Image (cartoon, rainbow, N blue to C red; front, top):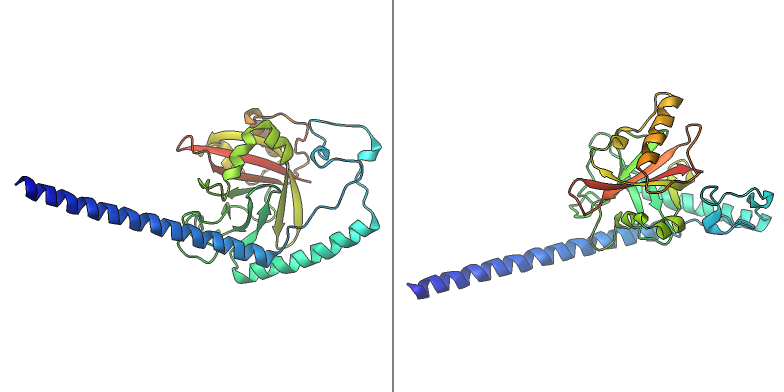
Length: 275
C-alpha cells in the first residue's frame, strides 16, 4: 500500500509542478507581450515633448512652493530659437498622438513623468468603468492593464482621476509610491498630460496615503468655488507635505492613484494642479 501511495504522491507532485511551470510561463509571456505593446505605442508616439528651457530658474525650483522668491528674473524667458524648436516638436508630437487616438478611440490621452517608468496611454470608457483594468491597449487579456480615467470624468472636469496598477516589476504606476520620499517628491513635481485638444503641464502639490474608500475619490467636479476650496483643504490635511503651491480659482487638478501593496485597501494618491 505504501508504494501505491508513494506513486500517487509522485504523480500528484508532477502534475502540480508542471501546472505551476505552465502558469509561470504563461504569466511571463503575458508580461512580455504587455511590455512589447507599450514599447510599440511609445515608438509611435515618439519622443516626449520637452518643456521650453527657462532662463535663470533651475528645473526643480520653477514652482513657487517650498522655495518662493521675489526676484523678477524668475519669470520664464524664452529665446526665439527655443520657441521655434518647441513649436516644431509640439506639432510633431500632436501628429504622433493623433495616430495613437486613431488606433483606439478609447484612448483619452497620454501621461508621463520625466525620469520615471510612467509614460503610458490613458484610456476612458464611461460605459464600462474598469474595461482596461485587465486589458491591454488592444483589448486583449492583460495582468497590468492600462491606466484609465475615472468614468465620471471628462476633459473639463475639475479633478481628473487616473488609476493604474502597482506592478512588482516597477511598471505602470508603481513609481507613485516613491513620492513618499521627500527628495523624490522634490525632483518629480511635473506631470505631462496630453489629450486630444492640448498638451498641458501639471505640478504636484499633494501626496497622501489613503483608503480606496477615501472621499477624495468622490470628487471629480465642484458645484461651487466653496466646494472646490473645501476639497483642496481636505486633501492638504492628509498630504505628507505642505507647500505653497495650493490650487486656486478652480484650477484643473490631476490625481494619479495606485495601490500601496502594504494594505489591501491602501492607496497612494499624487495630486497635481494645472500650470
